[in-house]
Length: 250
Image (cartoon, rainbow, N blue to C red; front, side, top):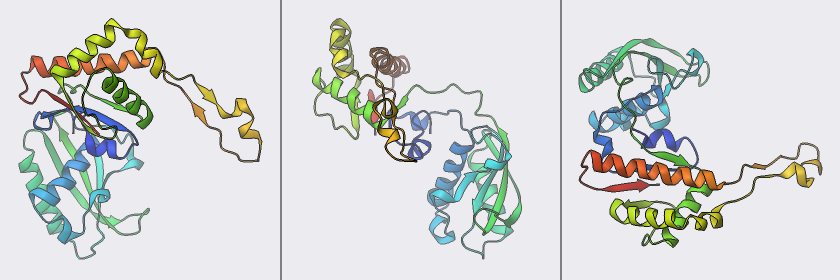
């Protein structure tokens, strides 16, 4: 799940930009990534997720034990099916360790009752994680509003048939558009937005408990940073001679 770390991003509202084909490239995996990877392994590699009742939200970092984005430490599998015993979890862990041999090693600690969900919970330990020294892949994650502005900018400056909510950017075409933007960078001003604070307009004081809405705006410098991130992704594609020459977003 590189910076294309899609499953992690699904937990956060917004739009991710990632390089097509980088899901096949080894990359750092933190607790969240490993939880998602383990869930997919159970469901798709072993083909037993539905049978065991283990779904997307049932494999989670143990937030009570420290940083959920760390590379080692405890994780949990919530077992809605009470018939799942130690032998089944041991089998899953053994198969996963073989699948990720040399990269990730899990250790099964036992099954107890979750104080949060009140159901049986398999406790695992990420005992070894050799992915933490790998290089991060380039990419970015934007709020829906900022992503929409960026896609509108690229579309209006020459990219063809871009859907606001998801699609792909051909790097050859994107390079031309970025060059045009950099030669005429005054167009970026059209896509900026000033910061605002609802409290400054008296909205937050109308009623007790009224929500305060802060809009950090979108500066010219931020738009430049988005363009630079796209250039870094293009450079990675060209340097590594990736065949698809595509940046996905969604």
